[in-house]
Image 1 (cartoon, rainbow, N blue to C red):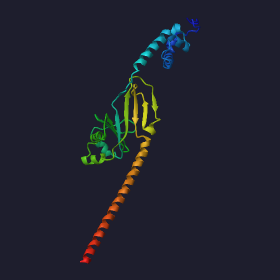
Image 2: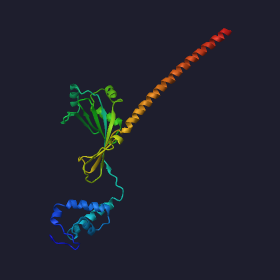
Image 3: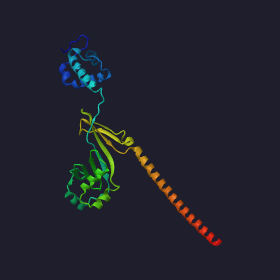
Image 4: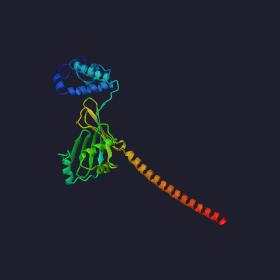
Length: 271
């Protein structure tokens, strides 16, 4: 009854108002209290939330039962299901001339409707994008390696000769990122975490395309860039060191030749 008070002295809210306007808010507030104290009773919770236990006690009791069921079911570790992921490889510098486009259209390629007007090729192994600036991006599905990426590249550009394909895929095709999808099994809010993108090469997000999954994009961490620079410097130092060793070997060889010539001359003079 509107305007009356229950035994605790709290003025009850209208059931219609709670159900139609505040039902979701009430669930969220109740769950927040349950997280802080899973053993809280419905009556004590109604008192904390300043609602009538007489009118809303059964609703709060239902929320408490639902929360405890979910809480107990999650006491064991939960491992998200890993969906088929993809690895992204990049090849730069493949000129997309008018003649090359015509050949591509005759070998299964289509033109994208996007503004970039990229050419698209699809295959059970993955898909390929060929941009107007000559950049080729390969999306290889599932557990893959560089060999599988080269195989997809060769199938996409099948009109090239074997020698040209070998030249194109040797030392130029490189992996740029990996895209992982973890199915949680429950709807998730949208978020976009880029705090670890430069330091650890991790971009974590949910974009709505898979409401029950978390997507992780793995790129090269920032610290590896310094590692690559260090390895390049080490390679240069080793090369310089090997050059010094070769020069020393040449000088040692010349010294042996000079000693041998002097020894021969000395033996001839003694004779």
